Image 1 (cartoon, chains in turn cyan, brown):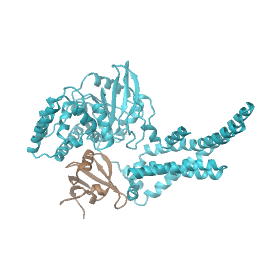
Image 2: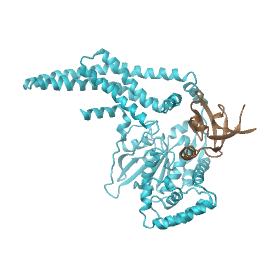
Image 3: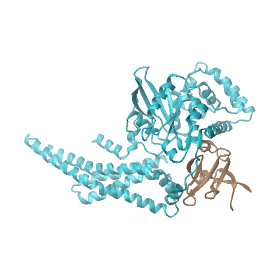
Image 4: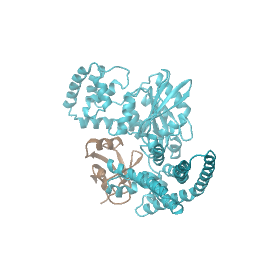
Length: 481
Length: 81
């Protein structure tokens, strides 16, 4: 029962089920361990699913991947172990996701990293590519959403990108499976031959300080000597736990720290404070991306078509936003509830037929009557009732929800509701995951219980499922905010 | 005439260029990571209610910022007063 409940809870919160990371390990040294990274919302998980044939839930809600997920595929006589790392905009480790992503790229032992980019806003994505290249030269780039870019009239020259970055670049449309074959070939090449990435150059004093430290670290290892020396220049508080361990386990750590002091003196002489250092590092990356994009994007501008603007002015308009949202949500609820009625009825009929049949069987083998009533009037009825009531609405609701996600409406709801949610010490993003699901269940609960609540057990159990469990969510959210 | 003013004060459908960020620590890093550095062009797209978040076009992406955050970003541009 307890297991069933926890399973039920997982069903209620689909994101919880995804958090369970499945860790696969290399079986032979021939296997390739690949890390798949990218900005949030660029179709990383779609690429991952398309390659592995797995069905990890994908959606355009940023932060889908909380921890890493693993999958495998075989091609060219090799076994590829793919790891989907959390989506981030940068690897400076300012948030939990960034820390996980960065630690995996540095110390996860990946043979190659694949950075998935969004063709419709390549410039912003290149920032992460540049940072990954600094950590490991075994980096490949896959530009996803090419169909979307084409629709908006954006043309990208992958060859120019390849030349400027010095690492292999490929394009694909993961949704339709176009270009996926070339990714694996590319990854094999990237893992076996070391590409020579063209790394961004920082200002003179930073380069000088870094070059002092660079020879102290092992060559051709991951994380690279250059990346490590840049991190050493930063204050120790910004290091992740794993980085600290790595540096303190180096045999020549004393020499490193001595040289680091010298290097920091160079920075100080040039009036570069730790804050200023970060500023310069970040803005150099942004400028380099801008520069590369200028050349690689052949046509199309990063502006928004008037049609989208018009739509947005309705969806987020001062007076139209809330009514529109309510109507849309009401429609979703109505579809869910009315659509679920028939299969729900069928399921419960099926369960009661099965129950009658099994009771007959138990009676025929002369089972004691208390056992029969415990098993069937108690446990069986509760379970079958819950399944027949919950399964059909969920099977309708989640696809609808995914449709709204794909249309990009969810971020708009978050945008509309942010102000009132801020007042309640939460943020607009929570509006959806929390309210929609719970409202659906609540409405459903009322309808069903009015129709057929015949025992106190059922009543209290459903009360538990529909109210107490959501309440625990509210409590968790309250605690985290 | 060019003015320097917080990004919150931008009018709808106007463009401006980032002058500097007035915050420090992780918020500064976050803003820089989405491409807000000196000289970045931003366009104010829409705002639903006063005091709520505003959507900006920054380097090809539509990003919503709360006034508490965009107050700390100073931009330069023409302003219709």
